[in-house]
Length: 253
Image (cartoon, rainbow, N blue to C red):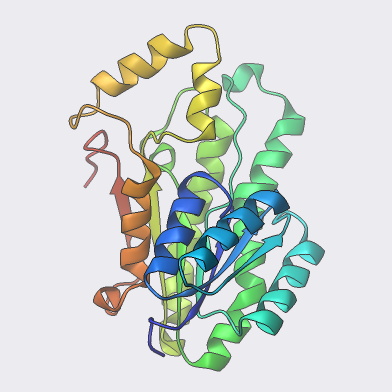
């Protein structure tokens, strides 16, 4: 299938990295299904793609609920066609030291970040198999690779995604479905805003920024470029890989 007219689902596509990715895919000629818990944000992103001459729909979806996922899949297939590509971007975090964390928050973090990724992939994978090819990009985090203070459960969920990506890449290669992961470093999204609003938040961000060799946190567009690479024809022989996009903050072999 030519990537120029393929259908791609972007979860959490209404804001931040997901929105940047959806808009770029729309500009590149993909048909984009923007899935987001916030239906208004999803529809806004889809409107922007259509205003630029692209094909897109906005779909309200809670990735932690399989019924919602399957309903979003069915609408996508009906209005755009069978998805060839998937960007598992939807995520949530609750910042706290682990010893002070609330077990109720653990479930939310795991259900959205890890179970949500599994559920959406499980729902869309049979269609990709039927197409005879596909691309899946899962958004993990450098917190999964090197740890991050205040994000123990989030890091655990994102580390689970890396194991899932590598295994699914092996299982799906026979079906010409390529599976890769992108690990953003600190990025100017709603999550960073939540850090900024905490006591000493600005100092934390300033210290973090000083530790980044490129001297700044990422913009969502910095991350979406890496995601779109894995969906491009240039990545046709790349699978099971993990790409860190962190401005040099993490350099792990």
